Image (cartoon, rainbow, N blue to C red):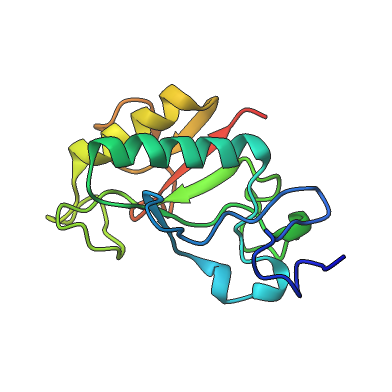
Length: 164
């Protein structure tokens, strides 16, 4: 039987039984960004808890049905819950960083004070998470969006934490 390293078609799985988020499959509705390429030997922050995996895939599917732009999925959790002090809150796979929606659809960062920031689209995306996942908290510095709480360093992404 082959292992994940020798079989590129087999999903990567860590010791917790968490599978790596598929890397931007065709027609997925999302793209991956973040630190997955900086330290690939440690999992690259792309290992969601099964509840989060289901939430990301469902929200991306629902988003794709209402909007042409893809959503940016960033840091989740490293393989095996490894902690190197980069993200103390991203250990159990129940947190994900997501880029705000851009008006121009480019797949690059945008801060909530930028003119390319799409507040209505971002609010719709956050509401999709709240509709299809057990959301505990959303951290983001655009306080005009219902339900969000401010947090240092959350101008260019929002952080969704799920109840596990």
